[in-house]
Length: 228
Image (cartoon, rainbow, N blue to C red):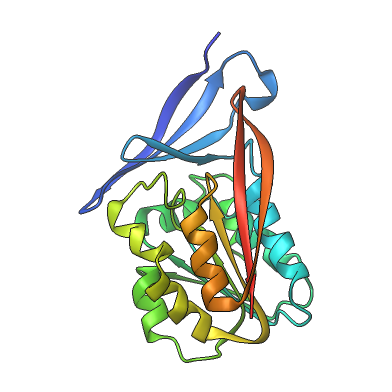
């Protein structure tokens, strides 16, 4: 039986619609109550399959000896930021999220785990475009940068986000990374151009593939880990 959903929140902006819906029925009883995020009708993530969001944080943190200050592009449902904050070495995390409504839903409990995830005093959430935030940041501001702002260059929710995966932007991000730091990028599919751009800019890139079960479908997501 296919899952049934109930819409719990919807917001519109100049970029389109952001929708939260909750799973109420289906073949998997363990998934009942799961919250799903969709943007312009496109699945972004849910609260069942969070493996790669957590792995984005864990794999990136392993790259850096002293990840005191971390920049995350994209709040999503908060799992990446929560995993970063679980590391006692981390002193400050700045999350840049484009959609005000998503931040509000996390804060007011529309996303049930949201208030507890955002309660950490080390966390600052800024509503802005990651491109603007990166342009305004001082060089060598962060030990670690994690980018999860879209579904990757091959499955964009917003066409304008293609710039986030292009060499000019990635080179600017590299300027923010302190010596010994790292950049990690999440993607819903393998991307040769992204890997090549990161290798050219940083000198070293490691693609990591993860097999995931997405509502009964076998999928493969990718992380790209780049270090100077």
